[in-house]
Length: 296
Image (cartoon, rainbow, N blue to C red):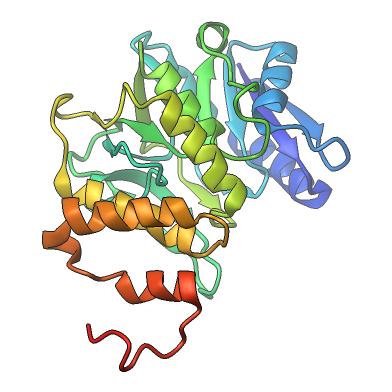
């Protein structure tokens, strides 16, 4: 038996999700949806509230803009979470999370573990991604994506979503992974194919939440499933560059832009060289044509 918990802002998408779940879950279930169009509560708060109302032991937090293509996925989640070593199940994640405040996906795809269909803005067709190097039914990861997260009610009683730190719509998944991962395994299942109809929105609110989370968990990062004490240079570089790219898209972060540019130059010069120099100069000075100003 499974409780499916949804923070909704689109009644049409929610109605489609209800039909999709009813046709595919194949186990006793309930759907608890909170209409967040007016109150605009933080997602961590909504999820804690819905979990407190849930009747069943298995809790599945899911976005409303998804289509689940696997029949019988509810029973699959129940079997996985019957393993008391496992505390959280998702459909996408990575085996490494750097210490830099970048998305989990800011690493080489060889570190991904996923079974999903993803829509991207600007691309006419979705992309099917199946990264399962060991050809297993599930894989342990360091972090999972929040599009779908399943856990037991007992785990949530130990580790609630941090609604005091995270008052908006971003970061709840990364923070929750790092909480649960203190005691339990996080895994990606390959027995549930999910189609996500939108891509992530890495706006200023996302950046703010990400910096909060990484300050909170700086003692626990980086996290490496294969070797807990090993840092991976290339994923760290990719994550650091990702942070700088996100900052450069938004004005008002001058000090932090300098910090991450300096990190790239001094810590990752071999990988980066002076790659972002022109973009950083444009960020500060609005120089559109750098010909004759800087010959790089």
